[in-house]
Length: 312
Image (cartoon, rainbow, N blue to C red; front, side, top):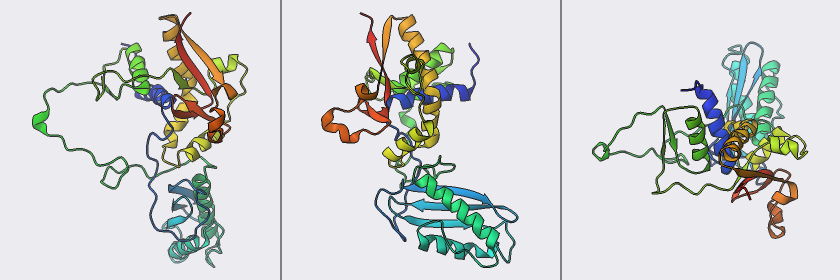
C-alpha cells in the first residue's frame, strides 16, 4: 500500500468534491435574527466573524454577527488589557460598534490603544462579511436542532445488521465521492463508498478546475484566486466554508491532472477544456454571469471547465 497522509488525501478529495458541486457545500455561519444599525440588503454575507488586533498588553478579539444588511450582535474581548482601563471598556466599545454600524467609533477616553485595537479588529470583521477578506474564523455547525444541517439522527442499534471497519468512509457516490474513491484506490487505501440509492449516482461530464495544465496550454491568464474566493462566497450568500473553497481553488489543478491520467492514459477518453464565453450562460440567462462564475452541469463554478468524452 502506498503511503499517503490524511491531509494529502483530504486535499485531493475536497478539490474533487468542490469541482462537481456548488460552493455552498458546508455551513460557514448562522446569522442572528435581531438587528441594530442596518444598511442595504445584500451588503453583507450573513454569518459570525472574528477579528483580532494587538492592544496595549494583549490580543484584543472582536466577534461580530451579520445579517445580509446589518450587524446583529457584537462581542468584545479585552480581558487581557489593564483591568481598570482597557478591560473595563469592553461593554462601552461593544455598544458603540452596535450603534455605529461601522468600525469607525469614538472609542473610550483613557483607553486609546485598546480602542484602536477594537476598531482594527472590527474592520477585519466587516471586510470578511463583505467578502473582501478571507474568513479567519467562523461559527461552524453545532449539530443541534437549530443548525441548518439538522440534528444528528438517532440510530436504532437493533437495525444494524453489519459493521465494517474502514480507514476512510466516503459518503455519496456522485462526482466528489467517485473522485475521492478513485484517489483512495490508486493509493491502496482501505475505504468504502456508501450511497443511499440503489445505483451509483450520475457523475457529470463537466467539472471545474482552477489554473489546470489544460488552461495553461490554452493560454488562459492566471486566476485571481482571492477574487474567486470572495466571489464564490458572495454567490453562496455566505453559506459555504471558505477553507473548503480555498482547498478546491488551490488543489483542483492537481485533481484534474490525476483524473486525466486515468481517463486518457488508461481508458482512452478525452478531456476537453473550455473557458470564457464558451462556458457562459445562454444569452437569456446572462444576468447570472460574473467575471468568474459560469454554469457547470447545473452547478455554479469557475469559468474554466473540463468535459469528459470518449475518444472519436
